[in-house]
Length: 150
Ligand code: SME
Image (cartoon, rainbow, N blue to C red; front, side, top):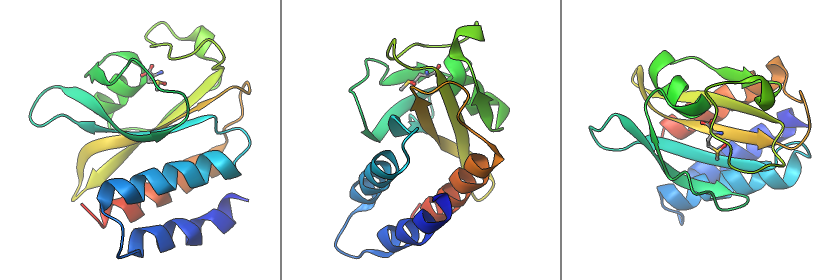
């Protein structure tokens, strides 16, 4: 399932009638609609030179957490660690920012442009422990595609 979505993501990246944010939104919507355990899909980006993340395009319920300081929550930790963060059970995390009480699990994969961590893709799931290495490789692929338009 994830494999078939790769070529669709690459097609979106190449679409000439969409600007960058429209492409990111289309990717979020594609993923949310087609992967049953992806319930909220969004991009966060470093906010200028500030030590904080700012919410970019997303698909799913609106969140209050449009700004996240570096180090805070799962997203803020990935901004500092530069590493994928897979959380099978959000209830077991101390440094976690809850966006919705329905969320059971989360995965965050950093987005590198020329080796620099400029942001991340963040996915929340209402299903407990749904993410595997296949999701990590898939989301790394997506971020590599997105990096081409930055
Ligand atoms: N749960 C995230 C905050 C962002 S929401 O999931 C959209 C975190 O702990 O960083």
